Length: 337
Image (cartoon, rainbow, N blue to C red):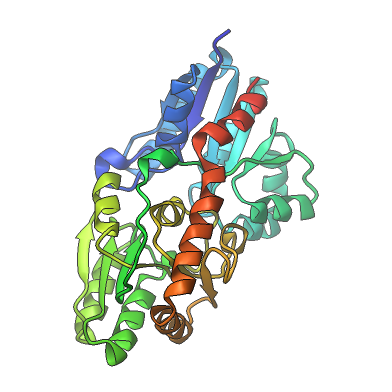
């Protein structure tokens, strides 16, 4: 019998933003035979929340489960209100824990978090980091289901020669610390004048212009592409040799998973859920938060060690194959039975 789902999240790619999980996981579930209602694609944050509340009120009694992408900052509030509507209608709801800073939300708003997460059918943690954080806070209804990709769509490139061609893929937001990438490029160019940096992603909070202004102020040329379709940045990845991730907070970023699938060696800050995805010196290289000098030195060491590059890339691809949708979907089917 077909299961009916209501999926609540930020469905904003048509407005020029990166696709979030509602537009990937939701589609995967449709392909598996679930009937999925989506909300919301409204661009304005307040209009989007009102739309989510309206659709939840309208559809709650017509679905078997409500899936809620749950973030740690302002988007936490739609998860809160929609979950309480689900409780009123006695519908099973599943918060999918997306926000890398949710552990701080648990500390700062314990009563609200208790209302949302303790009453959930299950809380889905895409990373071991959030599963551990929620269990430490006393929640017993937490299950780990990783983010997933379709591995056969990613062509693995083995790099024989490594050049200081850096790729950064993320929405431009202060929590992702894009200026750190520019600082790393500036320092790399002192040793490798031909070093380059391409930054892919839409603006989220004004950080794109701030980063451009910063690059101009220190005389560093950066290739800013803006928003790109996945297929376009995958192609771009073949022209680059190192993927950098500079974030202050994180969970299990899809762009990092995709870089691993494509064979790009990854150098990342070691924040939030990153150490649960990336094992330092095994499938990636990790540095401290906001430490541009350490990231630069790590990249310089990598440029001189071709054996390590290929081993990191091989290990990363093997690891990420465990997150192929054909593997991960079994956990979702079991949960939504």
